[in-house]
Image 1 (cartoon, rainbow, N blue to C red):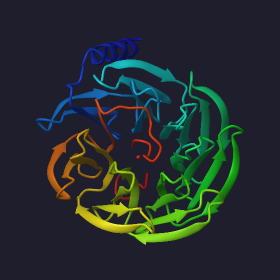
Image 2 (image 1 turned 120 degrees about the horizontal axis):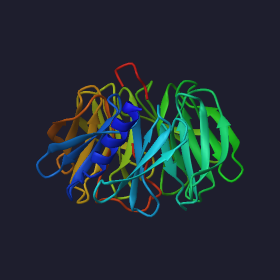
Image 3 (image 1 turned 90 degrees about the horizontal axis):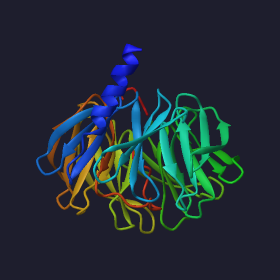
Length: 335
């Protein structure tokens, strides 16, 4: 009873903390906390508790809320997307490792990396439509532009699976390479990119049948994508090599830039003005700041243990097709 009272008090006190107008949220996945950073001063304002093992977070379809998934406590924490104020706690969302809304806002999907299943919810009210058990450590996810299919990488088995959202059934399940992680549907809705963390680049797939149609070398431990914002260029973190690649996807994808970022670069977000890329450094307990024009690291801020997802407050907007779910612990952890 005493521990419960303390937990309730902690939540109430934390709820009173509001972020500044230009704040950034960083999830500390092995510390059960999230940091709020003032972007102007590049300092951590505060560090607040959240469930256990928070890994990824995403904006709600209406652009009013950011949801943090806590995998070990089976819950979602909803924050006001402008102030960072705690708004609600959604219980009984089982092992929400990766999470995302379909482009039409109708479906909400989570992957249970620890428990080997994919959950498809009706987004309005988070009512479970179907749970699909599938071996292989379901990890990252992406949707097609029509909101008919969700694509899920299976890190342990080296495969990618496609599921029909309306019927919650498997469409295809194919091998792609060692430890697939980040997955991205390009704006043309005809090419799916899949990063191979166990290799040194990514593959291009045909989303209709899973056929591998191309491959590009970027760096060892290719892990997660993030859009530059022009519908053409995407960043890709190479976690083992310690670099972030810039990819041009017009025509055949090609490497057009590289940034050296030590300490296991992982999840990313871009400031509202489009000038800075923020990258979590999983093994250094820091988040790096990259000047996009120069493709150069211009700062690095200490945060908590194993920082994973990163999110710009005040940058919230309805989920856009073409951008990945906001994000995936140590050197031998491929998550």
